[in-house]
Length: 72
Image 1 (cartoon, rainbow, N blue to C red):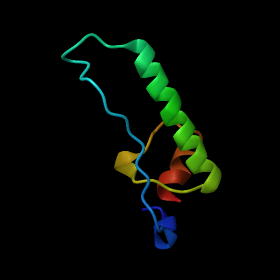
Image 2: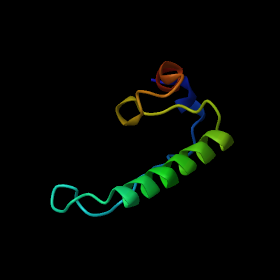
Image 3: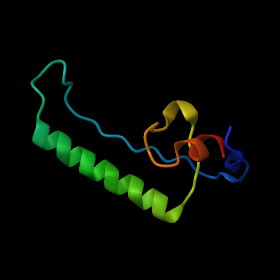
């Protein structure tokens, strides 16, 4: 567990909703717009809480510094 959990005070969830890609053809333009908005939200979180940790099961395993973000 990331030791920053001892100082944690908030949980931020960044997610999108929308149509199921399994039931209808995907709208790639809408998906790109959603991805851009999610990226902007995560960048803002990283700006205000640099180096903040993440739940291991909930984190992105491909960012720079993945190991420190999950284990400290």
